[in-house]
Amino acid sequence: MNVFVASVAFWRFHKSGLFDARIFVPLACASVPMAWLGSRLHLEGRAYSVVLGLALLAAGWLLGWGRRAHDDEPVKPVGLPLALGVGVGLGFLAGLTGIGGGVYLTPLLIFLRWTSAKTAGGISALFIVVNSIAGLIGLGEKALIWEPIFVLGPVIGVAAAFLGTYLSVLRWNSMTFRRVLAVVLWIAAIKSLIKALA
Image (cartoon, rainbow, N blue to C red):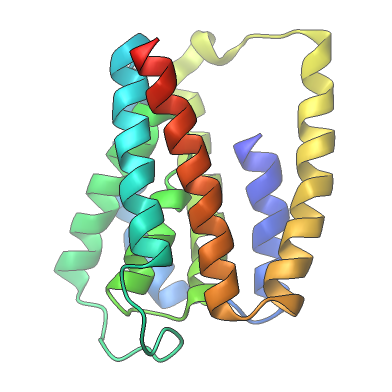
């Protein structure tokens, strides 16, 4: 699902010029091996739900309310050591939680003011693709789970990705884009934490 949906999102953002390879490359180079490692230590059960829920809560806050002014005005250059450190940390978290890492990267790119909100979306989409592939490789045979109903997942996901990227790229301003994504993250976070307490 991550690979299918994020590939559509990346194509849409990139087509609109909302991607920066200079930021993506160091992040991806550091994150891919760590995503593989994180997937080898894949969390399960309550621990997984708690880690995922707390990470999504933090990401939602950074994305929607962490920085209010000058959202589309990058003012800070990207330092290579910090970019590599971010890649290592987010790659490992992506592998550990199995969700690609883009939901963590987008808020951080905006909060650090490395890029505009929508360009952060394009970078994060490809970040999800490469880290999801690394995580799948790390899972090995554990990733080979199949049920006929699974066919519907990518179909519905890709259709939703086309709609979502149409709205985020062409219709919403940057703040609306951020707030909508933040609410989605918080809903997922609350659901995960409720599951942990059940």
